[in-house]
Every structure is written in C-alpha cells, then in structure tokens.
Amino acid sequence: MEIELNASMMCADYGHLEREVRNLEKGGIDSFHIDIMDGRYVPNFAMSLNDMRYIARVANRPLDVHLMIEHPNNNIGLFLSSLREGDTVYIHPEAEYHPSTTLQNIINAGITPGIAINPGTSVETVMEMLRIVKKVLVMSVNPGNAGQMYLPYVGKKIIKLLAMKEDMDFEIYWDGACSADKILEFAPKGVKGFVLGTTLLFGKEKSYEEILQNIREMRF
Image (tube, rainbow, N blue to C red):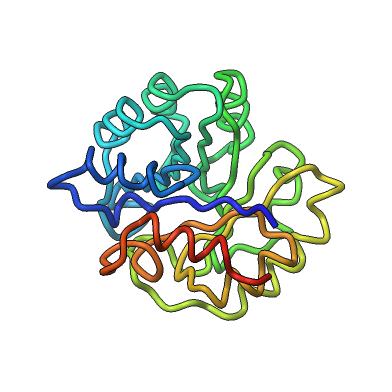
C-alpha cells in the first residue's frame, strides 16, 4: 500500500533548516507541509511567507501549504507566486467569505487546491467545495499548535469522507497527533497521506531515513 508521508516543517530545527530539508529528502519524505498562521484565525504564529519561500527554493519535493489565516484571498498571490506545479495550497473555508473564489484562484495558478477541515467543522458545510478540491486535509486536533491530543470523534468524519471521495474525486490527508496506530487504522481504509510532526518524526533519536522506512514497512 502506497501512502504519502508529509513533514510538518513547523517542527523542524530552524537553526539548520536546509540540512533538515536535505535529510528529510534523503530519508524519503514525499512533501513538506508548511503551516502558515497569522495569530488571528488560530491563536498562534507559526511559519511565515519567507519560510515557505526558502523551503520552496531549496527543496526538490512538493510543498503542501496550509493557510491558517483570515481572508486568504486578500494575499493569495504572494503565496502562489513562489509555488510550482505539483504543490498544494489548503485553505479553511470558515476563514473566507467566498472560499470557492479563493480555490479558483489557486486552480488558475496551476496549483493543487485543497481545503482543511477543523474538528468542529461538519462535512455537510463543505459539501459543495468537495467537488472543487483535489485534497481534503482533516484536522484531528484543533489547529494552531503542535503536540495536541487526538480528538476521537474525527474518525467518524473521515469515514464519512471516505464514502464520498471516489464520486467527488478527492484524496484525504490526516493532520495532527499522527501516531503509528492511526496510520495502521486509517491507511487501509483509504486515507492517502499523513502529516508527521513531533509524535512520529521530529525530535527522535533515530534518523529520518530510519523512521520513514519503519513507517513504510508497517503491516497494513
């Protein structure tokens, strides 16, 4: 079973950021997950536009840009201008008056469109957008900080989305508190990719290569 493993770069060592990118690529990471937070939509500041631009410049793998900001369409061009085909931009539908307009701007730029769904956001409220996007990032924790606890009711939401994904042509990705048992449970059900942070990938004694190899060799 082929799954995508994405590195949550807000958890990386910023004193050696290029080395982190190189070691993750050597280890076989599939993409770099970039969390942009404005301190308004979520109660935290995380990565910046310049962090994203730097990683885009030094990385050879795609970027998954997760915009946790209010009214992303106001500044979407600043992000899109530094990205390339194969990269993804996720927005939160609640953060925009007309999210479909923002998604169309992402599509027009040749970037893969996605939405991120908070634990408290129901599938029914984003139903129309599911026909526009190619990726759905399901937050298993409330957005804004690393190292939070998994909210178990999110699993039922994922099951509901899995039943729709073939008809609506999107893939599902997991973000937040991603442990080995969650991958073992949800990858066989059809979740395409997993964002790896402090739970599995960063701050460990093993190399990224060894960690990522161990994940891919798990028995699904």
